[in-house]
Length: 291
Image 1: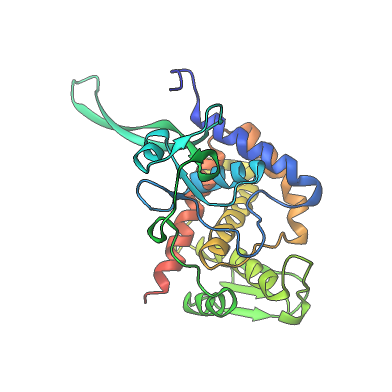
Image 2: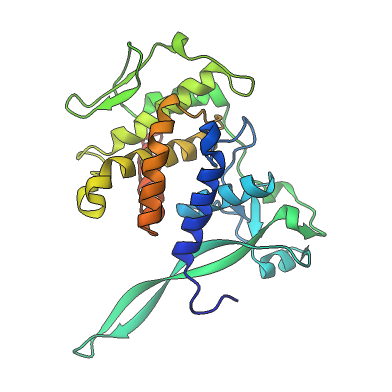
């Protein structure tokens, strides 16, 4: 149990900062994983995927320690699953919010959300666990065909041409380079690179006032641009995990890394806000699939 002085916001922010700094030299971020290995972290007790900043924190921990199962749980949850966390294993931390009631100056009850830390361990850190089919995350969608269908169902207008990928708010338009302009690497196909970039711009597209209406000026001020890019990067990573597309670091990520690190180091809650906004954007795009 962590003491009262344990700051979960600072702890998770430090984990993300360290992961970004480890990967910055190669322009690869901790949520960029190889095809087929990038899945949403799942809780062993509830069998539900983690959300928001907890996804990023657990991806970063998995990246640091070489974990690939995507399955996490508290000490008690693993015990209930018939497993034992090995002695000496170091926990990662996720955050949850608990409602508490306090009295105001007029002795009226007021509800507030208080952040609480929860230590969790990966399946690779326990003994005696025999996974069943029900313990795994939902089967991933077919990478290319489903990615194409996903993008089409969002209703976004996407045009191809030029050498840059961007979202133009004035025209409410996404522009991507021609498909043939995307080249592969030893670990990623051209199609995977294309869809990862398209998802990044789709997250930007959700920020329009008619959709998620993302207003970042008051929260981030001069850092709003860097915050929006971080939101788009996280959202694209979430979508790449959901649609089973490997995330390819865009060549222009290098110019954002320094801005992101400054933002995170200056504001321990920035990654929480960015991940929350990214989850909102992904939820909006996912809801469009049912329309």
